[in-house]
Length: 241
Image (cartoon, one colour):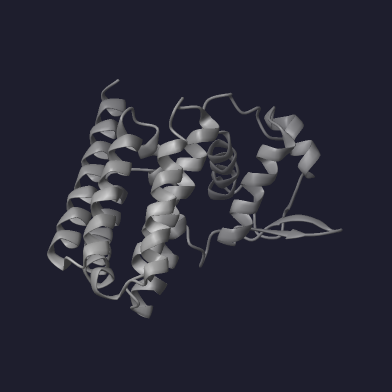
């Protein structure tokens, strides 16, 4: 039996955490069948849409298997993107954030420099387009707008790395997407962070468009340093309360 989920934000992540806790504690084992989507929504006191979103996310990570006509089955966390201690992308801890940004600053700073040389006009235009979309979505700070901003943020960083035209960098970035999701959502809910990130993205984009390698690298590194500092400060504040 699952406990009702409180109505704090984000609900999807809370649902995933609840299921993961049951897997880690042994209450759920590989092969176990989860309640139907409708029953989960009732037990967790959330909408079926929210449950469906959480289940799709977990299926994408390989933690569960959705077999149409048969049911939803636990596969476990062994060998998935969750790893053992990271509980990614749903548990954000200072040590995880530090490790993640250590990799991001190496990968994305280099990629920004390569993109300044190799990005196509279409890729440059896409960087501008997603940044504009994010800017339009933060006018009232609603939850739905944060979702739009988060998606635009993901598209921006993915497009930037793919615009480096380094297939290894692109593959690494795609493998990081699930790890980045929780960190992204948390950071963008911190007051002022979304607007600061959009401003940073514009600076990176301009450097890429003008082909300025050093400026692109500098702008990306400063952006990632700023995001990391904001997240860590927020985590420390939460832990002190």
